[in-house]
Length: 368
Figure (cartoon, rainbow, N blue to C red):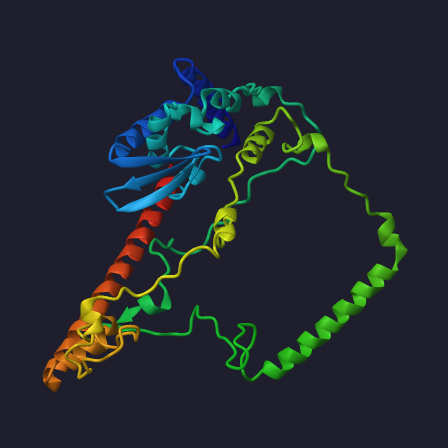
């Protein structure tokens, strides 16, 4: 069986080498097909450049906006970070900046990396007749013992599958009994105390034996320090593919976004004292008392500087006070509650759509 797997792997490597001889371009054909599919998806995307290799992409289908960093090769949809292939948002930015999307594909999908991965051939093995005899123990197949009686053809059924006279026969055969005190399967309730005593005794013996072994210097004499070979670690070999990919990941470091309030503008700080304060506009209606609070029993001689307590600014309470009957107020409260429920449902649906999109993206990455 091992020889069959060896020759199958040898033929696979050779077929991969011959397959890549006819490839043209920088990336592999399957990745190029994905790029073409993402180019079609990027048609309805609207791009707004922000400078410093940053772009804002809005998708009208999902009514969302994504931030794309072309320098660090990141996108808010996380498809680019997970797969190493530019997403349709990044391809839309490439169309705006006149950049070839294939140049932004990770180097592990290139034809050169593919040829390096399958660049080593396996040498065929010699036949079993030419193997050297080492004089070891000859391994023979196990002896065949003939069992008395007719051989069984049916499989062994589980206890819950045995049916006698139309009724399931529940037996304890094949069922592991557990202790009702501690829940372990090594004993039952009657022998629980004996089991705990033996367990404590075994732990004490194990501790004493460990201390004796650590005290004896003879054990330390037979310990050989293991010095790992640095040439066997691919992260320290500069010609290895793992080292090259690690260096590329260190170069593409995303920019750190400062979270918090914006810094104070020097011009605004210097001219803050000279900014005039907002005052209420005095009109003929306000001087005569015909402001927002008219109809609320206010006198005509109300001062224009005094803020109005009535009107639309009061919101829901003002609407409820306008209605004369208790039934109408109750109906208005129910209507306002339905409006708030509608807003909450829209938020829940938006979160569900975002989670569904993230799940689909993870499945596509797992399939690829």
